[in-house]
Image (cartoon, rainbow, N blue to C red; front, side):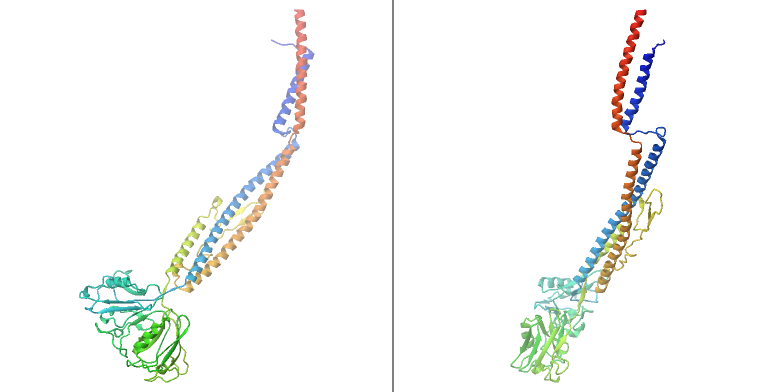
Length: 529
């Protein structure tokens, strides 16, 4: 059924349609904040806006690439920082090893196969083994009726129980060839296998060497269970072990009453104080030795090869004899009546240099093990360097950084092939820290490695600094381009809101006019109908 409008009604309908269309446009502009939605709205502004927004997106993509590279550089810098800290610890370990030094070990090892269960060949009842430490303590083991069943392990246990500062150890690294070692427990206190020890006992200790007395000889010890003879040129004197310097008379003392009255010896003790032993009456060698040792000056008097008299420092220092008179006249010719300590007549001061002893590097080697472990950790850090996109700059893998939207003049970052034994040159092994030279080599290498790491980190830091500045600049460009692009198509929200209000009012008037016109038409139809 068709509906007939009069002219006024048709005009009101057109006004309502136009008002609704304008209302929808303004409402869309207010809702989106845009005035231009396509080229049809404004080709020039729309095209310019799209160009700027496109450039903003391109710059954002470039910054994503820069961000990835920056994370790679930052991760690498953290790895290098960790590496530097580890190398710094290596420097400290090597320095500590230097300071720890090589501890003197006063010891000697037999060349014969001797284990804890080894019995003593040729031993008999009443034979003995006597050991006297420089601290004055003595250990004497006298074999009983079951002498042939006694083992070196039994003697080791008895020596340990005596607590004189000396022990027997058994090295079984080669089970078929065990070795017995006699050693000072603290590495400082010297000791002596006394000449009163039976040679039938000590002859098992073939291969022992003393810095004072040379290689082991049977003649150093008494035969069988006989008592120690009176001091003379044929007396067994045993073997001495220690590190202190020693000075001895130029020839031997062949008779017991060999020291004339008025004789004296001046010497420097371990405390640096000069002391003098003297006698106003004829004396024996044994009396003189006992009296000097009773001074507790850190100097031990004893008889040695050929029946000579020796003075030895027990603290490892230089032994110094200052002068002598009477039998020890430092100016007289060496005769049966005169036996001086100084090798040159008229030059009274005689000195004996300390012995080095065996080196005990246990602490150094312990530190060296830690040193080597840190090198393994550094290798692990290099291999497992956490980086973006799989580019490990510490294994020679490079990366490129595109800095702008035009991909012009990218930065090429070349990786560095870092390795412990390569450019870090940490070649010395902590397992070789048995000498000052090898430790010093490790100190020098680790210090040089610190410089190398700093150089690598500095190079990467230059790239990171430049890339970070470009990243910040790009971010600023992108933000400005986006703002300009949006501004070109942006609507004036205040203006559009005012239009909405006006259109709303216009719409209401149009609806009222339409309603009035419709009512008039209906009234006319009722009159005609």
